[in-house]
Structure formats: C-alpha cells, structure tokens
Image (cartoon, rainbow, N blue to C red; front, side, top):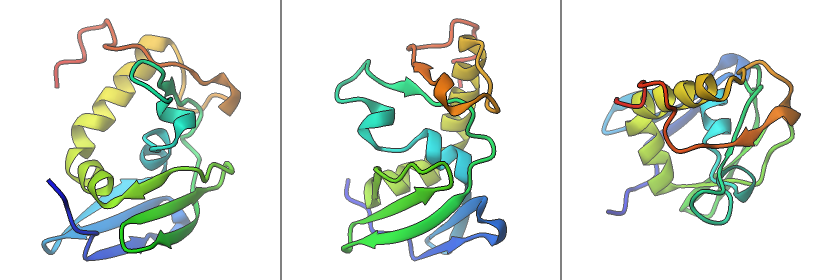
Length: 137
C-alpha cells in the first residue's frame, strides 16, 4: 500500500527527535531510532541477512533535513551519516511501527552484548532473533 508523506514534519528543539503527523495524530521518533533504522545500504546491507546492527548512536542528533522530490526525506545525522532516503512508505512504517521496532532493536543490542553508547566503529552484524526470549513483541 502506498502512503502519502506526513501532513507535517517537525524537527524538535534540540534536534533529538522528529515528529511526523498522520491523520492529525503526531508520532515523535527519536534521532537514535531513525539512525539505527536508516534505509541506507550501510545499515540494511544489499540483501536480507546483510544488516549491520548500529551501536553507539544514543547521542546522535538530526543535523539537517532535505526533501527529495515529493516522495522522500533525506536525514543528515550528527555522526555524518546521510546516505539513507526515507521514502513516504518507510516513514509511515517507522511512525506506526515504532514501539515494536524499538523493542526489537533493544533486544538485538542486548543479545549482541553491545551498547547504545559504545563507539560508532563497534557496529556488529545483525542476527535474526535475539536468542533471549525478548523477540516476542
């Protein structure tokens, strides 16, 4: 299903979150969440199973936003990452799947023995399932 771009996109004060408005309802997405779920090949890989778990992104902020035509948003992060294009369907999925996706990310961090505050070069390959029973959301 194709989704429209959000009715409104607001960068929150401090640049730590982005608010997306759909149908009058606002969903705030932390910069860390947007960064670890970047649609870039660096994060998602080029095929299933090639994802790289992003660690050390707890302090990342949004340095800039650039519209890409009428279909996507380029988010520039304070750690220099800027290669993901968040199209309208992906933005919708992030806004409406936030709770489950965030819980899944925290589970993967825990299973990998990694830290949200570790150095960025500590990124590790993502594993399917976390193996600790917390994957049942």
